[in-house]
Length: 89
Image (tube, rainbow, N blue to C red; front, side):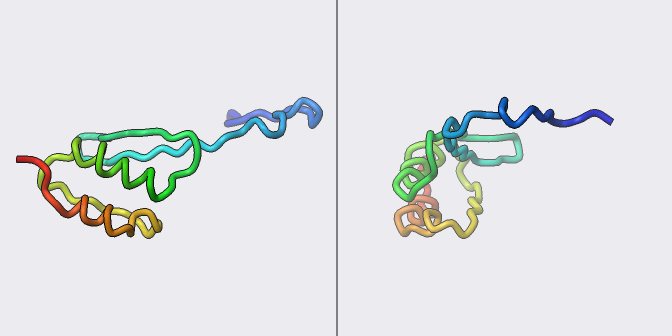
Protein backbone atom coordinates (compact mmCIF):
# COMPACT_ATOMS: atom_id res chain seq x y z
CA UNK A 1 0.00 0.00 0.00
CA UNK A 2 1.42 3.38 -0.97
CA UNK A 3 1.20 6.53 1.13
CA UNK A 4 -0.99 9.38 -0.08
CA UNK A 5 1.23 11.95 1.69
CA UNK A 6 4.60 12.16 3.35
CA UNK A 7 5.75 13.55 6.67
CA UNK A 8 8.81 15.57 7.51
CA UNK A 9 10.68 16.53 10.64
CA UNK A 10 8.94 19.21 12.72
CA UNK A 11 11.68 21.77 12.06
CA UNK A 12 11.33 21.27 8.29
CA UNK A 13 7.53 21.72 8.14
CA UNK A 14 5.53 24.18 6.11
CA UNK A 15 6.28 27.76 7.24
CA UNK A 16 3.39 29.38 9.15
CA UNK A 17 1.52 32.27 7.57
CA UNK A 18 2.01 31.16 3.96
CA UNK A 19 -1.46 29.77 3.40
CA UNK A 20 -4.25 31.71 1.76
CA UNK A 21 -7.87 30.96 1.02
CA UNK A 22 -8.89 30.37 -2.57
CA UNK A 23 -12.60 29.90 -3.23
CA UNK A 24 -13.77 28.01 -6.31
CA UNK A 25 -17.34 28.23 -7.54
CA UNK A 26 -18.79 26.61 -10.66
CA UNK A 27 -21.97 25.20 -12.11
CA UNK A 28 -22.37 21.48 -12.65
CA UNK A 29 -24.22 20.49 -15.80
CA UNK A 30 -24.94 17.09 -17.30
CA UNK A 31 -22.28 17.84 -19.91
CA UNK A 32 -19.68 18.95 -17.36
CA UNK A 33 -18.67 22.03 -15.41
CA UNK A 34 -19.82 25.47 -16.54
CA UNK A 35 -18.82 28.97 -15.46
CA UNK A 36 -15.86 28.07 -13.21
CA UNK A 37 -14.33 30.96 -11.31
CA UNK A 38 -11.71 31.27 -8.57
CA UNK A 39 -11.41 34.04 -6.01
CA UNK A 40 -8.44 34.90 -3.82
CA UNK A 41 -10.22 34.90 -0.49
CA UNK A 42 -13.57 33.80 0.87
CA UNK A 43 -16.86 34.26 -1.00
CA UNK A 44 -19.03 37.11 0.25
CA UNK A 45 -22.51 38.30 -0.73
CA UNK A 46 -21.38 40.90 -3.27
CA UNK A 47 -18.96 38.53 -4.97
CA UNK A 48 -21.53 35.74 -5.29
CA UNK A 49 -24.16 38.14 -6.65
CA UNK A 50 -21.68 39.39 -9.27
CA UNK A 51 -20.77 35.81 -10.20
CA UNK A 52 -24.43 34.83 -10.70
CA UNK A 53 -25.44 37.92 -12.67
CA UNK A 54 -22.29 38.34 -14.79
CA UNK A 55 -20.96 34.80 -15.29
CA UNK A 56 -23.32 31.95 -14.41
CA UNK A 57 -26.49 33.33 -16.03
CA UNK A 58 -24.71 34.01 -19.32
CA UNK A 59 -23.34 30.45 -19.54
CA UNK A 60 -26.46 28.56 -18.42
CA UNK A 61 -28.66 27.01 -21.09
CA UNK A 62 -32.25 28.31 -21.02
CA UNK A 63 -34.49 26.13 -18.88
CA UNK A 64 -31.78 24.83 -16.56
CA UNK A 65 -32.54 24.46 -12.86
CA UNK A 66 -30.25 25.99 -10.23
CA UNK A 67 -29.86 24.26 -6.88
CA UNK A 68 -28.06 26.14 -4.10
CA UNK A 69 -27.44 25.29 -0.47
CA UNK A 70 -28.28 27.29 2.64
CA UNK A 71 -25.41 29.81 2.44
CA UNK A 72 -26.58 33.33 3.27
CA UNK A 73 -25.27 34.79 -0.01
CA UNK A 74 -27.49 32.32 -1.92
CA UNK A 75 -30.57 33.70 -0.13
CA UNK A 76 -30.15 37.35 -1.19
CA UNK A 77 -33.23 38.70 -2.94
CA UNK A 78 -31.14 40.04 -5.84
CA UNK A 79 -29.55 36.61 -6.41
CA UNK A 80 -32.94 34.88 -6.24
CA UNK A 81 -34.42 37.34 -8.77
CA UNK A 82 -31.46 36.88 -11.13
CA UNK A 83 -31.84 33.10 -11.02
CA UNK A 84 -35.60 33.20 -11.66
CA UNK A 85 -35.74 35.51 -14.66
CA UNK A 86 -35.06 34.20 -18.18
CA UNK A 87 -32.18 36.00 -19.88
CA UNK A 88 -31.84 34.16 -23.20
CA UNK A 89 -33.97 35.01 -26.21
